[in-house]
Length: 108
DNA sequence: GAATTGACGTTCT
DNA sequence: AAGAACGCCAATT
Image 1 (cartoon, rainbow, N blue to C red):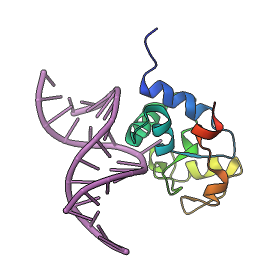
Image 2: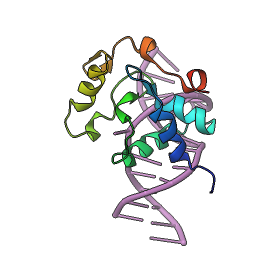
Image 3: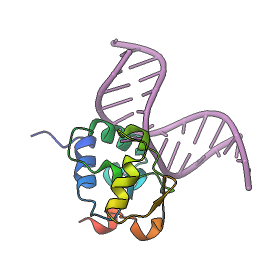
């Protein structure tokens, strides 16, 4: 087995984000490659469309649902988060610090 | 096969 | 303080 690719690591981390919590592209990217390869995280999630990856739990650093346009509906991402207990108003996560899930701290 | 792009973030000017 | 440029890895054209 070759080493896990960047994408595969992204899937692992994102898949472990607990309900009611969200993470950021930068945090995940930094946790994986120790560099701000945040764009690749977005790419990975774009390809992860078919996979069972909670891409809706990943937002940008300001807690904004920047990738909501990649979901079926314009409010699907927001609805998914609200369904998990995350308050989202106008494509922005409320209490972002409170629901922020840092892989480098929470994940082993 | 080379150039461009892509759900972002940091750094330089 | 605000805006522009660069960096990261992989995929698409």
